[in-house]
Length: 303
Image (cartoon, rainbow, N blue to C red):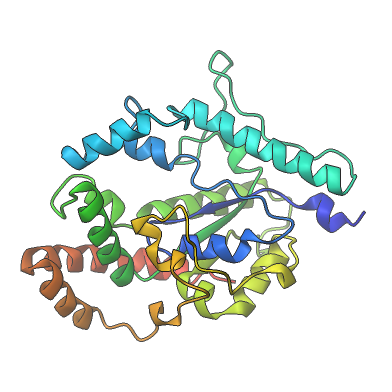
C-alpha cells in the first residue's frame, strides 16, 4: 500500500456563499477517493431554533425554520458534530473495505458531558478537529460574490443590505482570520529552523475552479489525490432542483462566463443600480471595497 493513501487527511473546505463551492464539489464528486459531506453546519447556522446565529426575521425565514424543524437533519451543533464524525468514520471504513490498510485516526468529537477541549481557533470547532484536516479556502472577487448573495438571500429570506446579518455575509474577514490562525499554529508547532517557509493552507479562487485545471491538479497533489479523476462535464440534473443551485444543476460543464478576470467594480455598480436601486447599490459597493484587501490578501496566498 502506498504511503500516499496512508498519509491522506480528511479535507475541510472553508467556503463563502457564491464562491463557486458547488462547482468545486461537483468537479470532485465522482473522484473514487472522495466521499463528500456537504455543508454540515449550514442549516443549523440559518435555521436552528436555539442555536441559529442568524438574526434575520420575517415570514420567509419563519417558514424556512419551520420546514427545517420537520426534517430529520441534526437540530444542534452537537448533533451536527456527531453526524460529521459518522460521515468521516463511514468514509474511512468504506475505503478500508476496498483497500485494506492500517486504521486511520478519525477525529473524536466531544460528548456533551466530557471535559471541554481546547479551542484557540475562531470557530465553534475544537482545535484537534481543525488540525486533523487539510484546509482548503474558496474565495471569489467580492464584486461577484456579494451582489449574487444579496439577490439570492433577498428572494429566499427577504434579506436587506441594512439588516444586521448582511455585514457578516458580505465579508472575507472571517476567512482571513481563520487562514491566519492556521499559519500561526502551524509555524508555532513546526520544528523547522527559523526562516523556513512553512506550509500554508490551500486557497482556490473561483476563477481557478472554472478555468485553471493546473491549479486544481496542484491542489490534488497537495491533498494526495489523483487529478485524473476530476470531472469537468456531467449530465443536467433532473431531480432535487433548488433555486440557489440552478446554474450548476442546469449545466453540463464549467461555465466560463462567470470568470472575474477584467472585472470593473464601477461598471458592476451600474448594473447593481439598475437591478437593486441606488441605495442597495451604494451599500454593495461599500461592502465590496471594504472586502477587497482581505480578498487580495487571500488571493496572494494561492500556490
